[in-house]
Amino acid sequence: MIPFNKPYLTGKETQYIFEAVNTGHISGNGTFTKECHRFLKDSFGFKKVLLTTSCTDALEMAAMLINIQPGDEVIIPSYTFVSTALAFVRQGADIVFADSTPEHPNLDATKLESLINSKTKAIVPVHYAGVACDMDAIMELAHKHQLYVIEDAAQAIDSYYKGRPLGTIGHLSAFSFHETKNIQSGEGGFLGINDEKFIKRAEILWEKGTNRAEFFRGEVNKYGWVDTGSSFLPSDIIAAFLFAQLEHLHEIQNRRKEIWNQYFKSLKELETEGYFKLPVIPEYATNNAHMFYLLCNTADQRNQLLTFLKQHGVHAVFHYLSLHSSPFYSNKYRGNPLPNSDHFSDTLVRLPFYFELSEEHQLKVIHTIERFFRS
Ligand SMILES: *Cc1c(COP(=O)(O)O)cnc(C)c1O
Image 1 (tube, rainbow, N blue to C red):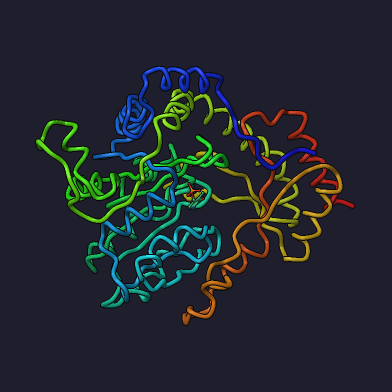
Image 2: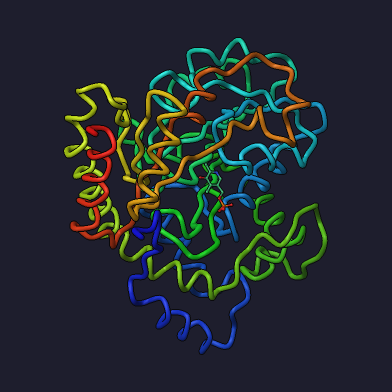
């Protein structure tokens, strides 16, 4: 069976973990955590970076930092992972779901303004498949209505909007290093801070509501409980693993882009014949090759394709069930239908995609898809 995903190891992970253990200190904010912070800040230009144990944690920190209160409304796409909504729902927010664009699962910025009212506090664009949302349009609306923008950049490491790294455009952003992402540490993530006013409080929320970070920098002479928070920081063992991955960022991205381009080129002909649609990358966006997907014409065709691939040794998968239809939120959702979001839930197929996918296996995936549609 060709798996859907296989987490990549660069080979340095265990060496760095060994080094971390040998320092004698593997709690949070240690040597490797600082290395990762420096790498991410220098590579992409955040004002501040804080590693977390997940993107979910980083989103929770963002929700706390912008002081989401019960009754506040937060606009997010329905076609996304649970955490995008959950982090705000935990603070009492009401979720207002935005529909996707017709061409791409990203939220449709041209339809956003009708969702904004006096209770709206934030917009959370999700850069699906690492492809940028229309950030100029979103930032302009946010500025006009005085809203915060939190980028869910879980899939968007090393991807760009008009030359600007994703995650550096909104007030705050959240990234994931879950083992299904381009760069991984099993579980992991970080909060990107672009508005300096959040830096001091973010460090406090990160460290259980204490001013420990300031204390260790020698800025205060004792530390204590000063705010709310949680234990959001990962052990330095996770940071050691992560640093081994970050050092190979370019090599990883280049190989993934090769795989992506091979799929695109090889499946183009079937697309031209009308069997399915290939991903669209808007002119303002780059492709960080997070995933490769097809859009089938109908849900039935999609399900038959998944079954056929499985029978022939290829593990392909669908993706999100739109959150407005989820068991947890469907009875709370009072908004309009979201046809584009439903369409992506019904028709999207993700193909096997990982650094070590061999040419031979990729050709097998492509040929199996050809057989399905041509026979
Ligand atoms: C993976 C993912 C998350 C969650 O990331 P974790 O690190 O597992 O918490 C959130 N949002 C999106 C869009 C994702 O793809």
